Image (cartoon, rainbow, N blue to C red; front, side):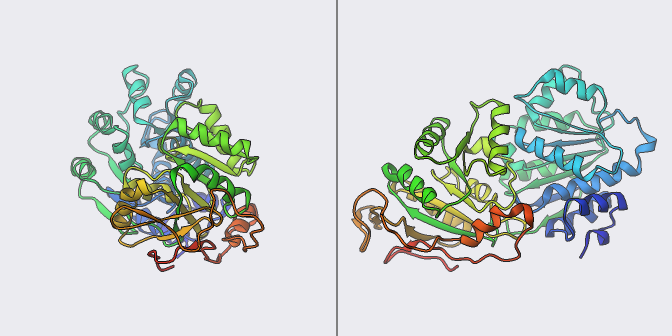
Length: 443
C-alpha cells in the first residue's frame, strides 16, 4: 500500500515524498483513514512505529480543508506530549509535513523563553504542541484560548501518567469544547490510562499494531553480566574496542550520568550527557552532536530521554536497569526502527536480577545472557549465590590481543552511512561470549 491510497491530498503526498518516504507503516495504514473519517482513536503504538505521522498527516488535511471558514489565528488542534524534546520533534514533523499547506504551528514547553513563546502565540497558531505544565501556565495567564479547538491528541499518554501529569491533563480536557475529535497514543495501557480513555474518547476506533508492552522484532536483546564496580570500565572497553558503536546509554540518576560521562571522557570517548539539570540549550546541543556523529555516546536519564527520536540508532545500552519493566519497553524502542535492526544491551549485576526477571516476564521470554570478553564474570545461582563462570577471563580489566570479529558490523555501517540511505537488511549476530549453562534466547 502507498500513501496515495490512504486518501491524503497531493500537498501532503508531496511533503511525504520530499521526506523520503513511500510506504506507510502499519500504524499509519490503520490510523490515517480513521482520523480522516472523523472518529476518535485509541492507538497502541511504541516509539519508532511512525505514530507521529499517523496523527499529524490527517489533522493537517482536515484543518486545511476547512481553513477558509475559521479564524486563522485560533488554536484548532492541541497536541499534548510529556517532554520538551518530544514537543520540539512533533512540531518539526508538523512543519515538515505541512510545508505545502498554509497552517501555522508552535511548540510550547518549560525550560524555554516564555516571552518568545507568547510572541509566537500572539502571531497566531492553528496547531499547538505543548507539555501540560507550560500549557496550563499559559492558560492561567490568559494567553491561550481553547474555544476553537477541534482536535486533541494525547501522545505517549502512559509517559505523561508516569511523570505525574494526569491531573493537569484532566484540567486541560475540562477546558476544551466537548465537540472535538480526540486521539490517544500510548505504548502501554495501565488502569489509569484505561479510565482516562473512557472519559476522553467517544466510541473510539482501536488500533493495536503490536501486542501491548511488546518490543519490535528488529531489536536483538542481550544481557551482559557485569558486577556494579566493573560497569564503567566494561562499557568503556566495549566502546573503545568498537564492539559498541553509536549508543544511547541510560542511567538512573543525574549524578550517575555526570559521573559516567566524565569517566568515558577521560578514556578518550566522545561523549555527551542530557539530564534535568542541563539547560535546554545544552540538551539540544548534545542531541544534535550525537545525531551528527560528533559524539558517539549519549548518556541520558529516563526523563531527559523521553521523546528522543534518532534514526538508525544501532545500540541502546541500559547501564542501569529501569525500575519498571514498562520503562524497558520505552527505552529500547529507540532502536530497531524504520526497518533497521538494533541491539538493546543491558549491563546487569546480581543486585538487578529482580528487575531483569520482571522485564522477561513482561516480554514473555528470557533474554540471552552473555559476558564481556576479558572481564571476570560471576554466575548467578537460583539461591542467590555466586560462582566463577567456567572459562571467564580472570581480572577486572579488558583482555588484550582480542582478535574477535566486531559484532554487529552491519549495524555500525548502517548508522555511519545513514545519510546515504537505509539498508534493507543487516546481519543479526550477537558477537559476545555466551556463558556456559546460562539461559539463552532464540535469535
